[in-house]
Length: 311
Image 1 (tube, helix red, strand yellow):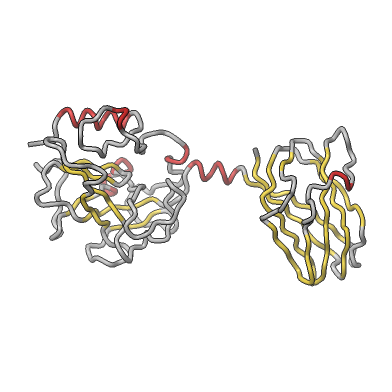
Image 2 (cartoon, rainbow, N blue to C red; image 1 turned 180 degrees about the horizontal axis):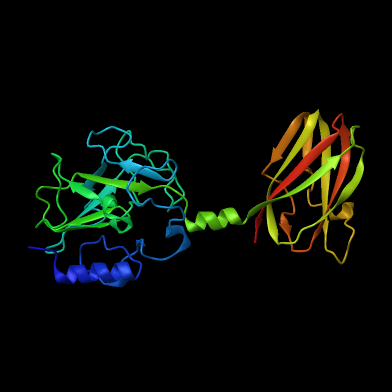
């Protein structure tokens, strides 16, 4: 007996509305809480090319195609989980697709959660057959022998890491597939919103003198996330940053955004600060920044790089 028509209808509608179809009971749509991959949000959309023919790509696609357990490219583990999805008459048996021990997925970033995969995690980014027939996930029993898509066991797969099978005899144990670990559209958008404001202070071959060194107008709204200072030689320097509007130009010491923790190199060639304790981190489009050297020893040239996220 195949999966019931009522179950298949529930599965299809839940998928369409962005809900998981992993609960085999025929509960209504509103009962489901797990989002499904068909929901079109930026974090679900693969932003890097999937080749026409299935193959591993460093940093983007992990192969799970080796029948020998314990290898970095072994088949994924398929196991029943009655806590997530109890069995139901005519509604199939629910299985999870998870990361086995020693697999190459361990430590790779799950693009849908932003967290590194660990042993036992649900594999949430299985590449589906829609990218080409060579990408087709293949389900195996313990021998391993393929359980064909047209088998009377009647099974369906959700690329978020779930398998529903009507007759679990023999039970599914392995999944041969490829897993996407590359960037999503959300990642690309975040990257596009990251920038740096760079200013060079040059003493012309002599030790940098104290005082105000110049201004920059910032044409976009942003939030400061980190400040790096790089010097031409070992020494010490303290640089204050002032900010004010175009209407109030020029900024003065009263407009400092660095509180008591200005960018500082101490007997070194570089410094980095991502804590930015008590800083004013928000910059509005059109604001003017001024760079003032409070003190300097030995250094004749330095670059201050202010990393920002555009808003």
